[in-house]
Length: 309
Image (cartoon, rainbow, N blue to C red; front, side, top):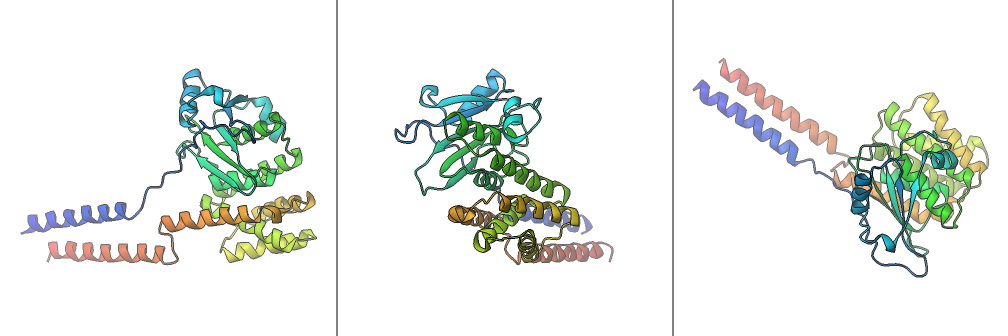
């Protein structure tokens, strides 16, 4: 009888583990956009490769980014000199993450596809989108890929270089500020242990409020930051809260008009919400998880007690 009960106990545990695994969906990012068609008005797609890539890795990235015909795209390398030039990075950096940029007609907005999400470890597509909007990049489809695990910063540098060499020079101060924003986002995710999507949501909501309220002073920026922290129920150290205030005050000083990209900010916010919904992270999600485990452990406890009764 006891052997039967023990077998039943283990069966119940296996069923519970299966149910838990089945209840958490696995998400895949979008694949790269096709490069076969050349837009005669906007020009060919531009592909920028991290210059540390070996020949084999370069071919792998070319395949990941769906570059079937190298003559149909313009190809460049992004180097340590570039990361120093565009975002004041370390000139000795190894560059692996690469990007393909397809410019779009006005009004199409900014679309980011991380083709190798497992290998871009720090920067989410919403973080890329936020940083690129700050830098002044709009109306483009950007695909990012890396054959090895990297933070993703060289891809951002490559995007800036692509616009520069193609004659659409971006403002250096805005590029540096965009990199500061990316650093703030990754620091919050690491130091504060915040979910990357939550970080992106916070930055996006602050930008939306700046677009709506057009703050004239640092104190007004600080109020917006605090309101969004409270709204999203995020608690930060004083140093990290001040880091946010300083970042967005720089944006105010540069007179970045986020009202011009309000629709794209809304798209980023919508993407974050959709991802949360796909994960089942509604308001009652954690309560459901808690109830599930409480009921599970209670059932297991009852069965274990029954073994010795």
